[in-house]
Structures are given as structure tokens and as C-alpha cells.
Image (cartoon, rainbow, N blue to C red; front, side):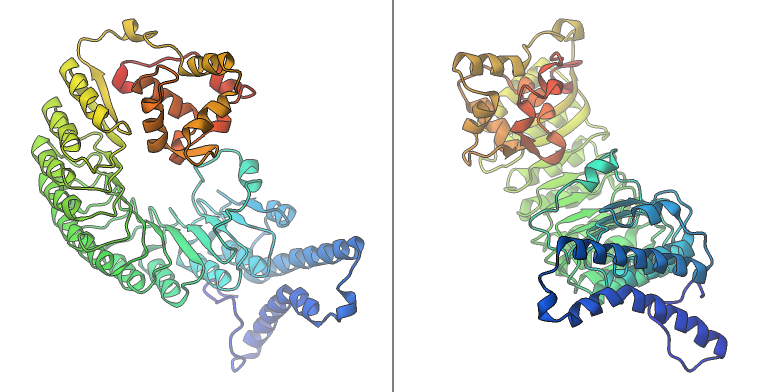
Length: 517
């Protein structure tokens, strides 16, 4: 079988050698689909099977799956992966760094066509190229059980067991799939295969991570065409590619037409000034995008001015990362003008831009001037500020208690003096709970209007600042949020229960300074 052969059998009008090979392929698919066919033909009287009969059927099905994989390996000429054979009944299968290549990937794909057990598949660092992605795409057209596919190491959890035991999200049906195909050298042909799949299949794929695949301008044009008609994709990661000016134009056209995309990562590309300005032309008309990462694109003040105009008009964007783009105070003033009218942005990251404290003051005052601002987090953590800035920030936070600004440090403030300036916030809350004979969990739930055990970070910060039961400042609240699950954009009150020593056992340390907690 040639590496580029499709998963489906070819027509039978070729040589005898090809006929024999096709017959073997047809056998693979017959074996994969046979259990379903048998189940459909069962008479009604067999519907009340015993547990033993069900177990025997599942065992038989698993055995056939293993035979199918071994036969696929024989046909494509690769050595079977023993780990996959042992774990193909599990919900989580990690095949990272196995050197599968396109042929090994094809064998895995054939085995997964009818597999109903594997929900999460990792295929990082396997050089699958365009031939491997073709096999995976053909498999995905048949398999509606696979929920997540990672082709780079997953950073969410270092413990595979945690991922395999994670319950399926209620809001995601089995027909919806998240695919991470990063760092697999797909190139233009791989992009073409994926985009054809996107145009022909709008029912399963909702998230695509395509970081580091050597995509250039031509690939951006393909994604523009595909995503202009596919409204099911909610998240698209195209970071660490080679997009430049023309790609920004194509992606801007896509954003002007697309009404489904909610998250777009274009960090670590080469968009520069013209690319970002063109992107912003489409972004101004977009009504669905909520998260945009443009960090490491070097578009400077001109790009910042275009983004400031977007912020003035756009009321859907909630997260904007502009880190390391050579934006100085002049560019920041343009962004600040947009923020004076913006009613949607919650997170703004400006880390590693050449900003001074004067620019930082302009930024926070723009939030103060906007009574409808929803800003929650601003990252200027490379900027050294003064005591005067802190006083101005206190005034802004009095108007917008949900706001938190990360800065480097306060000039002239001794780190050692502030090391124990504030009491551990957990101890304060625990003391209040003990005095009133309630649990810490009950205290936190009383702050939640919905009464649940989870709460958005911004809402929690505002509630903690405005409550009058426990005296606590915004720096203590920041530390508390870190302990309650900041990375998920939600705080989980269950983490505060005494049985979790990680929360109550650690001493509170505000770090170098109030702005560096």
C-alpha cells in the first residue's frame, strides 16, 4: 500500500497486484464495521442480553480491533506499536514521540475508524506530514467518538491519568472534535487537505491547533476560503508559522465574513505593519471573535493605531494579547483612546513592550473614563511604576473593582519590608468562618449570586473587594485567585476546603512588590 493511498478501497479496474492489495484493504474495513452490522441484524429477543454476553461481545470486538491494527501494519510495512495494542481499549492513548511517520499514522488511523473507546489521542512529534494528515482526516470522517486529538504535547496536564479520567463536557456532543495538529511539518499540501475537509465537513470539528506547520501566504488563502463557509470552527491556532503581509489580508477577509470563530492565535508570525493593518480592516466588521493573540509580530505603533480603532468600534473582543510588538507610549495612547469607548474587552496583555510609567498612567485613566468598561486584567509586568501610579490605580479600582493591573515593581519600595506586609488571605477567611461557625466553602458561596462553587475570576475579584466581612486588599485577592484556579478563568471554591493542604498550608508571600504578586 502506497503511503498516500486513501483509507477507502480504490476501484477494481487495475492490475492483479493492485486488486490483491485492494482486497486486503476492503477486508480491513469489513472487519472494522462488522460488529456494527451484526448488532443491527440482531433479533429483538436478543436485546435483553446477560452481562456476560455483553462482556464477551466487547472482548470479541476488541480482539478484532487488534487484528485489524496488526493487519494494517503488515500492509503499510511498519512495526506495530505495542503500547497502542495494549491501550486501544482505553479512553486516553498517548503516542507522542513514537516516530510514526505517515505510514505508521495511517495504520493507527485504519484501526481507529470503528474504535469507540479512544476519546483522546496524542500524536506529537511524529512527522506525519501531508500523507499522515490525509489518513487522519479520512478517519475523522468516519469516527464520531474521538473527542480530542493532540499532535503536540498537551500542556494542560502532565498526568495522562487525569486526562483519561476527565468527564466529557456536557455541552460537547460526541460528534464534536478538537484537533491539535501542531509541529508536524504539514506545509501547503497539508493545509490544502485540511481546508478541503473543513469545506466538506461542518458537523464535527470545532477547534484546530495548527501551530508550527510551515504555513505561508498560500496556506492563509486556503484557510480564508475554507473558513468563510465553515461556521463551526470556534478556535483556530495558527501561531509559529510564516504568515506576513498578504496573509494578514487573507485572514482579514475571512474575519469579515466568518460569524463563528471565537478564538484566533496568530502569535509568532511575521505580520508586521501592513499585515496587522489589513487584518484590522476585517476585524472591524467581525461580531463573533472573543480572543485574539497577536504577540510577537513586530507591528509597532502603526499596528497599535489600527487596533485602537478596532477597540473603538468592536464590542465582541474580550481578550487581546499584544505582547512584544515594539509598541511605545505613542502607540499605547492610540489603544487607550479606543479603550475609552470599548465595552467588551476584559484582558489586555502588553508585556515586553517599551512602555514607561507615563504610558501606563494614560492606560489606566482610559479605563477610569469609561464607566461601561469591563476590563479585568492588564499586563504591563515589565514596567516599573511609582507610588503616585499606585495611588492613581487605587482610584481607578474604586470605580472598577474587578480590575487588576500587573506591573513589575514600585520604585523605592523595599522587597524585604513588604515580604510580610499582608496576612495570608486564607487565614483571614478561615478565622472569619470559625467565628461564625461556617465552612470556608460556605463563605465563598455566599459571594456567588448563583450560589455555585465556581465563579468567573473578574466577578470573584469584584465580590471580594466589595464584601465587608473580611478586610482584604486587591493584592491579597490576587494571591487568593492564584490558589483557586486562575488558569481556567474560573475560581473553584472547592479548592479552599481544609482537606486541601496546598491552599491553607503555604505561607502567604506577596513576592517582590505589590505589582509582582
